[in-house]
Image (cartoon, rainbow, N blue to C red; front, side):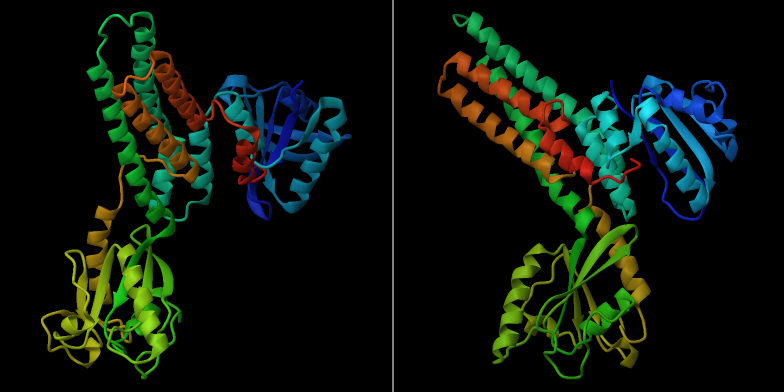
Length: 432
């Protein structure tokens, strides 16, 4: 018999309300035992007193969910009790005391979600989406995580699966009717179309990494132009040392901030100039290599001719500002000052207009596991294309197509190892 599990599903500590979740075949028996009342109607909130050994423990809102109507796909009870530490500890103790009689025990990390997965309430992509959603810090992260949880990615995978099944159907038909032309060109076109979709998905994964980790924006310019002062102002803290001495910054200093619901990582970089200092030279070399990874650059200059001496091309998305504009501005560029904040608001506004083009709006794969599976699928389908053209035996072609189908099943978790599942569920809190 399956265990019935329980856990506090809200953060422990002083609060107005705390929620205990009980899930499993004996959930309703547990509820009857501690309330001495019948189970409420499905999904109907009712006020109940909690009793134990003749004492009234608390007055709670109780919600009961039938087996297939709950989050976990099991009979589930939610106890919305008062949020004092004393009540939380007492209820946890009472539920533990019910253990031997009613086969109930404390839940492990992610065990409610594990029940939901095994009961077909969600697939592995949705589970990963939920895991990301619980850790989301920005609006962009929330959106992409919720898309995964809401099944947007799973629907895409369903389309890929139907295409692979159509390819497999053609190849298996060729085994039985190999004396007829069943449409080799059509099969190759189907594979080509699917490969195009999958490669686009892999490309979009780079955008997802930016959403999770932050878009890199480099602040560059000649030495002592005020780059460190600016990044300190943007970060609202001293992340870079500032000095009147030119060439102070040798390493790349990073600071992650939120702009319009997205993470942006500003890079405070070495001043660009000709120098004989060995360490400064190394810093400039590292900078030029890192510039290949940034989405745009913010140039700070003292005068317009600095753009030539810096030796870095200004791209179409880059921004150029006259630095230390609190002392005056005799250039064609907008002025900015990391010391006084002059022009910062306008600069951030310009950035906000440019950022959306670097993000994706619809659901895309969001984990390295998903990326790996799709990458394997691309390799297999590419091999299958060459094999068909080379006239490989029909039985072997069909077997490769079946392998493609297996990878898609692994992607959604219909076929996977307990080891992989364990790693994923371990990232959840106890109450989820």
